[in-house]
Amino acid sequence: MKGKIALFALFVALVFGVVAYLPSKQEPAPKNLIYMIGDGMGLSHVAMMMIEGGYQPTAFDRMENVALISTYSANNRVTDSAAAGTALATGHKTNNGMVGMTPDSLPVESILTRAKERGAATGIVVTCEVQHATPASFYAHVAHRGRYDEISHQLAESGIDLILGGGRTSMVEPDKRDSENLSPLAQMGQVGYRSIDDLAALDSLSEERVIGLFSEGHLPSKLAGRDDFLSQAVASSLRYLEGRAAERKEGFVLMVEGSQIDFESHGNNTPGILAEVRDFEQAVAAAMRYVEAHPETLLVVTADHETGGLTMASGNSDFTSSESGIEYRYSTGSHTGILVPVYLYGRGAERINGVMDNTELSRKLAELMNL
Image 1: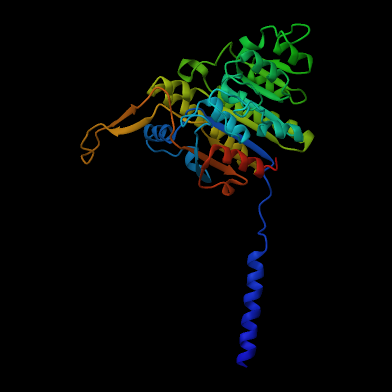
Image 2: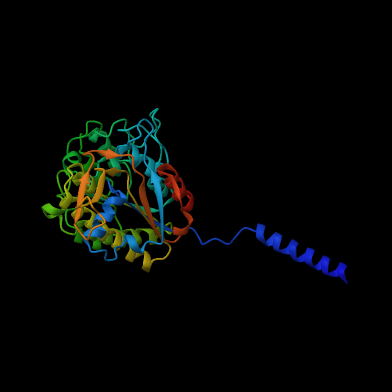
């Protein structure tokens, strides 16, 4: 009898051992990716918004997962947006100032480009010039971020379905590489792009590629009257890309940048920072609403780096006393090497965890999206 019990116990142990080693059934891969970057947005910027909002819930508080990333570049412990954008877009480190290529000037493809090559719909929405460092990292390959002529030329050839932001000046200058001396914007018109100057026009388009350049340079700051452009552009872009993706059955990738958090942080402008972070949070909320209605979508919100070295100190050195206010202090007018947050929501959110490098985040997203 004892022998039978021992044999049965061994059988049970073997069964459970085999089951333990069987591959677990994972949730399907996300079909769509919304990749949102708050330029210069550190955890302290998010904390400022929470404090000034009386700790009322924000879109960031509703995220399903949170991680942290390091931001250093290939040649500097404090990155610029070009190197950080390249890392987030391609999964490769590069030197500060370089866009879409390794330090030895080898071009590397972004997650957006790989998605386009697979047949997915693609889009970029920013509040800066569309040739600026972060958006350029998703389609261009230049040795220096200031080469707007080259970047504009490469944007014209990118084949991205939707581009919304500023930067009209560089896009209408004649392109000497074109045999007819056409501007990059004119070249885009020749290959079927529709140019719009009103976001509302996007809602009636889906069968053609679209470029919307809403200012000569960067868009106005939030305090200077940009209104709700970013959140409205995100909502409209998602509807547009959904229509494009339905034709191709390959989903979409949308990159969104809250560009001017960084601008205001360089100036240590507390009201401006608060306005830009709140504006970005509204755009994040718009993306979350889309994810809730389309659960096959993954939303990733992060930053390229922190700007300003923002801290929040008690207004009274004796912080053990009753409320004495908050002082927002800045250690620099430049970037810092602080880790920045990653917020995740939707399909696959649970599969990116812990502390990692910005390149690792990009590689994990590419793997998750089967790119």
